[in-house]
Image (cartoon, rainbow, N blue to C red; front, side):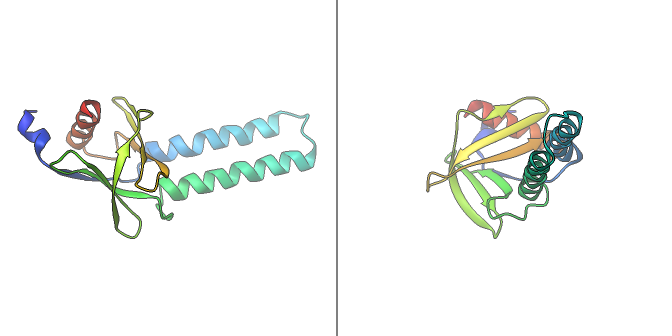
Length: 145
């Protein structure tokens, strides 16, 4: 990829994917399994922990998969001035600052960012959420940031 391509603005639509669903649901199912396997929990404590796990799974599913929450990200983009922008539910476009705690690999990108109100958010992007070329372009831009 030439340097000219990196100076051009781009925008990517973040889609739900099977791997993202598994990334969110499997740890919750594992935690539920542990509650049922560990006997020392009294009934009310086990029920309370089970309710917390279910609520957590619903929250993260609504945030990253069904995108029903106001902080759910639909698009991530970078303008020609290298500013990062996210479009959240309700088509609210806002400039954000990427945090050093963001993570990139060949299969998974976790973008942690902060908005102008100093609220911290996270976007999970699995390699099957984007076309191969789009995933590589995003990975390259994030690694150069």
